[in-house]
Amino acid sequence: MEKIIDEKTQGNTLTLEAREGNSRKLYIESYGCAMNFSDSEIVASILADQGYNTTNLLEEADLVLVNTCSIRDKAEQTVRKRLEKYNAVKRINPKMKVGVLGCMAERLKEKFLEEEKIVDLVVGPDAYKDIPNLLKEVEEGRDAVNVILSKEETYGDISPVRLGGNGITAFVSITRGCDNMCTFCVVPFTRGRERSRDPQSILREVDDLAEKGYKEITLLGQNVDSYLWYGGGLKKDFKNASEMEQATATDFAQLLDMVATAHPRMRIRFSTSNPQDMHEEVLHIVAKHPNICNHIHLPVQSGSTRILKEMNRQHTREEYMKLVDRIWEIIPGCSISQDMIVGFPTETEEDHKETMSLMEYVKYDFGYMYKYSERPGTMAARKLEDDVPEETKSRRLTEIVDLQQKHSAIRTAEFLGKTVTVLIEKESKKNKDEWSGRTEHNNVAVFPKENYKAGDFVNVKITDCTTATLIGEVVGYS
Ligand code: SAM
Image (cartoon, rainbow, N blue to C red; front, side, top):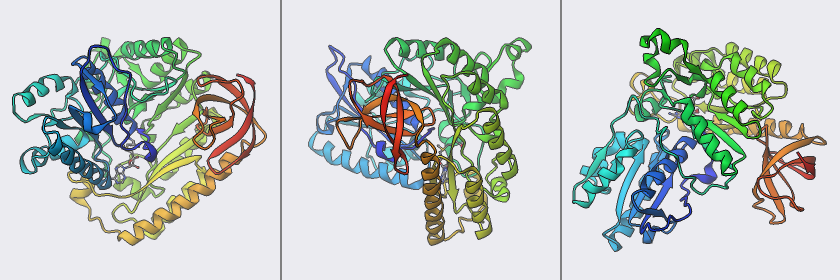
């Protein structure tokens, strides 16, 4: 969930400050969506209480964990290669234990443990609190596995450590699992049914982050707009809740309002919004609070109503366009980004052209685009033949990536000559004399450091830009 997949962070080994007295070493690597990176922080937090400090040196690790992604076949192949590497190290250091976490756990547990015997530990996304017990099993020489998906688990009571963070921006999980059953998607099978986290525990986590000096949070879930707290339990069981529970339930608009009101100086983002669950109330809350960023990640996956129906996306092309119009009416200038899949089964040239014309209509600020990858167990895999040839998928992908580049360039250039507020996050990778940060519209901006520091909100006059980056100079604090 991103869910935002930043290719630059894939496979990052994230570490945190050592806790005194901890003597064992944990090496944890994460793949996939933002949700996985956030989960790794929960795991590191649980293991810090078990005597583990993190390391970024594989060779010195007592425990190696890889938090895996199943969303596309390529993601799984990458992880399998990493497992080969861990096993080569294990031959030199036989005491080292290797565990697979996350979305590949359920699907491949037997293969990993029994057939290939390459891992000691397999833990699904809802079983992280069981890791201490599972580690005992491993120490006693048994393979350990827990891939049970839960109706309740939201890790609301765990205060996650922040792995590899900049101390400025953080993810806060608000929902787990997904009920949308998009026919291409493996998430409902790997992460289970949708449940929401207690708003009080979310607020406590944000309070804690604010106290530690964080300046921006992203509320995270596969489908944040579907957030619904009625005392705990699955979203699908809401209809069976008592009248009292239903009447006092908290939805996403209310949660967003609560968080933004409690922390007017904290910048707030959220991801991912599924168009079918996005209500206008949320848009009004975004418009009402200056600290909620005017950016909506609104995956559409295809511009063809026929394909959207095959994908079970529960909205048409026209309904999506209307939603985009409403976003701009209620939040003028709001930036919108997309996820798109090319080559879904039966996708014709005509369908592909509809995707391109929808992109022309929205002129997304940026997007994440993928070739359809058939996932075992999904409805599409069971019912539809993966019939779009690989060359066609590649060509269509190139076409939409090129179009997106053109649109990103147009959107970025709209800021030329304007002054925008930027939260300074880190040193620019290209120039150590420059800061890099993001605007509320999620554009990266770079500018001379002067006397400003990471964590400052500054006003930057934009004088130049590339396709995706704003270039400017600071005119003062915001
Ligand atoms: N929950 C979000 C939604 O429904 O819009 C996104 C979840 S998913 C982790 C991130 C993106 O991966 C999706 O938006 C989709 O574009 C892509 N994706 C998911 N399944 C895929 C598949 N089988 N093949 C290719 N891309 C896929």
